[in-house]
Length: 417
Image (cartoon, rainbow, N blue to C red; front, side, top):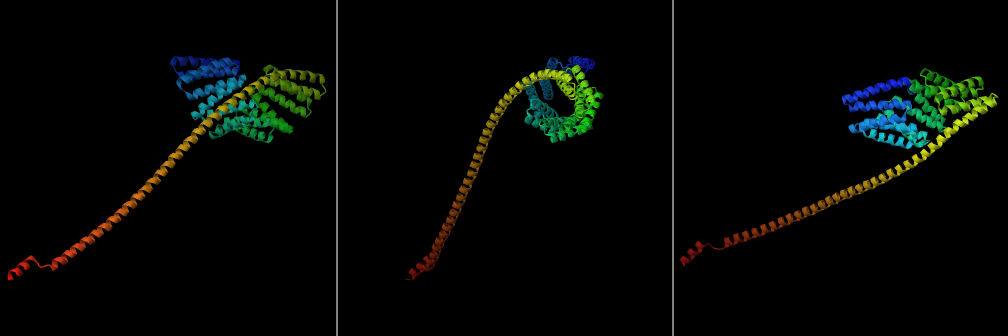
């Protein structure tokens, strides 16, 4: 969470950038400034103001046709709705962002959208969709070597397996995530991975390993003053000491978790601290204390249960909308399949027609060639017969000429008579 002074300084800075962008008439700079102002308000927890500035930024990006900017604004708006628990709206904006990022080939943006969608499904306990989106995100992050994104994917996938009680898989992916995060040196993410590994070893009954990871996580969280994480670490350590029957240490850490959780006002942390203290008091013989902490646990748990009922209703609505969307997609796919089959059938008919046409042309050409050949042969025979006849005529004429006396000879013969 951004501190109050830090928030004021950031708002002041981006307000000045926004004013300068108006003077310079730079729509791109104006959109960026609005986006960052929205980010500051989002971190403050002021959702209405965050949405206001994100929507202004989105409008400018749409006017200028900046698809990458549009996708980022849609994703930011989706994140706000996600935090508000409005899952259908959050998914709507995430998926619109994802579609644009896929269109423009933005692998990094696509991966983060998939990660956000996967996290949302995970929170709704839709395990199959959560794993599908996280694995797709991991594949893209690996392709572009985005180690921070890979770390988030490993952690998310491991968390899903952990809640499924698939401990070997959870341990495998938590360790992969820790390794990547240690390479990057992000203490907040490292502390988160250490805490997750501690939870796994605690679940397996390896208390010394669990305590080691929880203490390392606590140390890092104190360095960066991550109060919610510190409260969580206190509670985890108290729970381990309870199992080891070190009740004084267990009570000290659990009580520290409760004090800090009340300061922060996070119901989840309060629930964890109250039930841990109730178990510690019960184990150490302080039944009155155990009863009081258990009553507080029930109060906080009921408030969360009511929220859970609301989320269950949202989940049902989400499932209904998803099924409607799936039905539309299947209908569209069926139409596309029919069109493709018709196109394929038409192509086959065309190809078959061309083949038949070629065969007919070849057959026709063969008959023409054969007819021409026969005609030529007949012509040769006729010419040969004509030649024979003419030769016979010429021969007979020569014989006739040679046998008949000439006119001169006849005249001479007659004169002598």
